[in-house]
Image 1: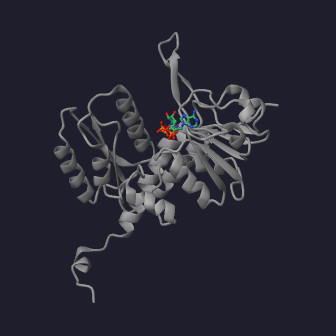
Image 2: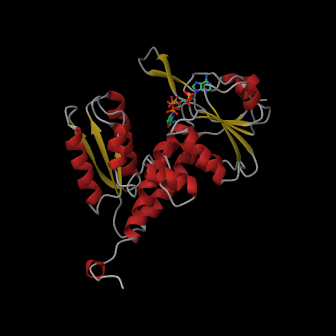
Image 3: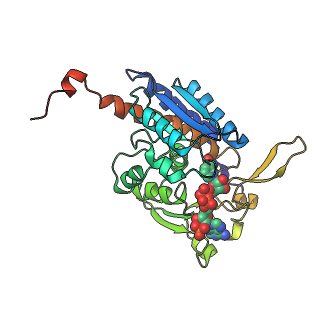
Length: 297
Ligand code: NAP
């Protein structure tokens, strides 16, 4: 028996449709602003993809492509300006930043209400306390993918391999909010296979190609492969990519996300929805200036 493939593109398509429909209902077009420093080829291509998807769903926006020599002070000044600009709904700074720039200082300078990457500590706190947050895109995209394919989460035992701030930890918060029983494993976890074999839903986010083998998976489990590692170059010169999950897991699992074409498309689609969510909240909070000037009783 071979696992059902939980392909990303149809689920991402549904997410993009939702973003497009909700954006069209707003009084003003949401704008996604992306700040990129330098010409790192991976960053250039990620940002180009975000720009393309934003156009596809009818969002406005600007890519602020700055030279690698931009100082931290100049970057913070631009973020401050975009934070204050009411036309800007979503703002993100493409990582990694050049050495010499304090990434956490920069990310913390983005207004939490425009932080469409969901990395700001205020959004992290909102996520864990159940307040309306802008959730990080990859974990939120994983939940959307599971929902799209009707995978139940309530009462299910979920095991996440990986505890990063951008994937493992926020995914744990989102799964808990959906009433799953969650365990997070990491590089110091003992008896990892015994733990992963207990999972109804197993999520691999370790960045280790093919390291989840069939013996680590409970027959009938749903397996989500977040990992993407470059494992070589094809004859045509294209990057060969591998997930964290060994292809033979398809013989054991009930359902499995492919790599590429699984979680990846969900991440950028969720970014579009986050921009619309931010715009909805910001535009709902707007009051005419004459009313804003009236002192509160
Ligand atoms: P990361 O920051 O490097 O974190 C990796 C996590 O995996 C760490 O918590 C680490 O444990 C754990 N780990 C590493 N080796 C392990 C092992 N042998 N056993 C158990 N746990 C182990 O990576 P990340 O940013 O979360 O990304 C994880 C993967 O997802 C990468 O392949 C990345 O490219 C991919 N990714 C994909 C998307 C997407 O859109 N599809 C988005 C983001 C990331 P310690 O904490 O103990 O070191």
